[in-house]
Amino acid sequence: MASGKRDYYSILGIFRDATPEEIKRAYFDAAQRLHPDKNVAAGETELFLETQQAYEVLSNPKRKSLYDATLPPEIETDTSIKHEFLYSRPSLVKITEPQLLYVQLEVGSREVAGQMATPPLNVCLVLDRSTSMQGEKMDMVKAAAITLIRGLRPQDVFSVVTFSDRAEVLIPASINQETKKLESRIHLMQPSGATEIFQGLEAGLNEVKRSLDPSRVNHIILLTDGHTYGDEHACLKLAVEASHLNIGITGLGIGNEWNDIFLDALASSTGASSAYISKAKDIERILVDKFNALSSIFADDVVVDYKAQAHVHINYAFRLQPEGGAVALETPMHLGPISRDAPLKVLFEIVVDPGALDHDDVILMEGSIKVSVTANPAPATPIRVKLSRKVLEKASNEPPPASILSALSRLTLYRMQERARVSAEAGEYSAASRHLQNLATHLLSKGESSLAKTALMEAENLERMHTWSDGGNKELKYSTRALLLEGAKEKYK
Image 1 (cartoon, one colour):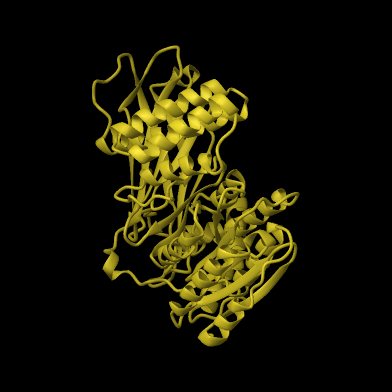
Image 2 (tube, one colour):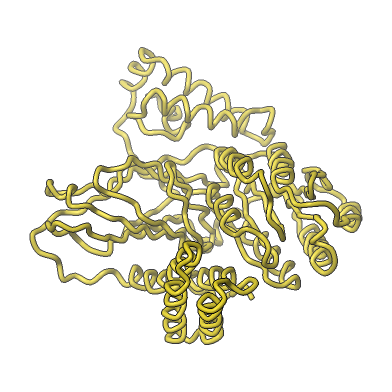
């Protein structure tokens, strides 16, 4: 290969043994992000042309074969990304029962936080203005939106969509807008109508797509206080489209009436998360914190593309930082962003059935990790993943790594409330009550007396009245989730 000539595989962000289907998919993904009709940033038109040239060569078997002959040996190390896997046990044991194994993945930047460029934003606020938002909630939403407007940087793209049973683009996506005019539009917001989230999400996605730029953090922040009815499937389908474009969706729920299961599913499919705002006075703080977190993103998503292994099941996956939240078990799996200040950490719970133990080594996961680095519009070189454990006759006495023990200790609290919720939904109220009593005991041992009291009160409610108190299940869910964040003590109260 001629000196200085770029590697076509690197341009598309694929391995050299990529299949024709993978080459085609990588090209289409890159073309969507880099097309000159959508991106006018310096250098991106040239990158789009390079992408076209790479595809023309690699999609033609004869030209690909001639090109491959010119390449030096493949080096699969991305100098900007570092990653590490930790295992709860060094080996598996040859027994006739399923075995549980925990694997922690940490992915971060090799650069020092202070040396990284702060990415520009392309963010749309999608705000519920249905009748239920009237009063203090609407006042706080307006104040929060104005605070964000005043904090915008010259390079940030910002838009606002409001919705009830129809959507309105209150502030179209643009850059360097006049602050006073934007504030006056926010003041004009008036609550009315019912809640139809799809209307708002669709309009918000269109605004972000208008300024879609891979060198920006492209994100939707949805804020609502109610259920949406009949359009959940359409919303989730739209979230899948957003994830293909590296557009994240954060869900913020106010009060007790919104559907946290739905918002979790919506956000997690894009690698983002949902949050609980129990009091209107906290709207501004949480919204501003989220906006600041977006400004600190180094990579907007880490995606694990893997093949299922016979007799091996990923039973559970949970993001420990930078934002706590369950990860949707799908292929590809969107794990979420990497912060400039902290790496991404995800804990996988894997079940290995006896049928996998016929070989000396068991493959737990095989595939690749793909990282979308915000400051670099070209795809980063993927990282090959092949996780395996040896099979021995006797169990090892080696203790699990301290970081996994710590993560499991905190995750236990969250999963106790999950089990209580599942039991309550199945009508098993006594079992749900016992789960919450166990949760209270563990919370007390960690000094979380106020949250332990909430758990005991909800246990009594479920035992006696077969129902949660208003907001009780959300309080436990999001407070135990907040305890997972390493070094963070913020609670949603």
